[in-house]
Image 1 (cartoon, helix red, strand yellow):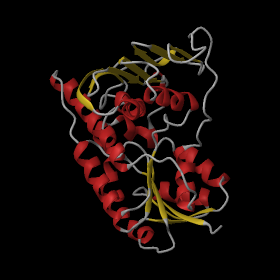
Image 2 (tube, helix red, strand yellow; image 1 turned 60 degrees about the vertical axis):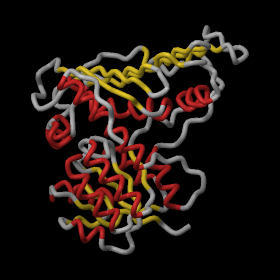
Image 3 (spheres, helix red, strand yellow; image 1 turned 90 degrees about the vertical axis):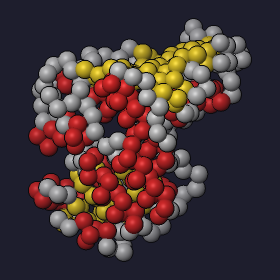
Image 4 (cartoon, helix red, strand yellow; image 1 turned 30 degrees about the vertical axis):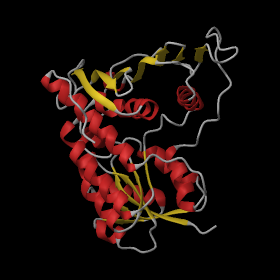
Length: 337
C-alpha cells in the first residue's frame, strides 16, 4: 500500500497532541510539511513529525506529493486555509467547527463540495456503539413518536487555572474561536442531535459566565431546539461542570433511553423484547475508530468509511449560529441552510 503524504495546516487546536500521537502510531502515513502563522509552533510540530516547517501555505498546498491536509488552525483562519486547500484539490480533515458562523461554514462547504475532495471533521460523538444503537433505534421506530431529546457536553476546564491559556488562549476568545464553552463543547452534542433528528425549525439559547476568567467568551449555556419532526431538543454545554451524571436521554411515546456518565445505556421499548430499562443494555454495535483514523482509511481507498459531509458540518455551524443569535436577542431563530 503506497504511503499517504499529508500536510499540517495550523497546529493551534487543543486536540493537536492527540493528532500527533495518532500520526506517530499510524503506519504508512508521512507528514511532509507543517505550516502555521506562528513560526515557533510550526517548527516544534515539524520536529515532532520529522517534517519540514514552512511559513508559506502555498509551499504546502503547491506540493503535488501532498494528498491530504489536516487543518488545526484557529477557527477564524479556516475560511482562507480550507478554501485554498480545496482549490488545490487536497483531501481535507478540518478540526471542528468548520467556520466561525453560517457565512464562513457555508462558503467553506461549497468550496469542498465543488472540489470533489474527501472531507472529515472532528465531531466524534457519532462513533460510540451506544450512540449508533440509538440512531438505529430511532430509525426503526422503537421510541414511537419522539417528544424530547437531550444531550449534555460538559467538563470543568474553566475551573482549572491555565486550561485555556498560553497557545490555547485563542479558544477563549470568541473573535478567533467563534464562541466559548457552549460553542466549543456544544458543537459535539449538536452534531449528534442533528444526525439523529434532522432539520431544526427554530432555536434559542441562554449563555453565561461562572468564573469570569474568560471575559471574551461565554463559559456555559443551555439551548433549545424545535425539530421539523415535532420533537423538542435541549443541549447543555460548558466548561464549568464538576461532573455529567446523565449525558444523553430520549423520550418517546413507546420507548425511552438514557446514557450515564460511566457509559451505561438504559433502554426501554415496547417494540423490543427484553428492553425493560432496568439493567444496562449491552447488545450494541462496535465503536468506530477515531474520526481522523477513518479519514486516513478513506484516503487510502478503503471502502464503506463513514464520514461527516461538509454540508452536515456547515449545518452544525448554522444551527449554532441561530442558538447564539437567540441568546443575544432573546428570540427564536430559524437556522439558515
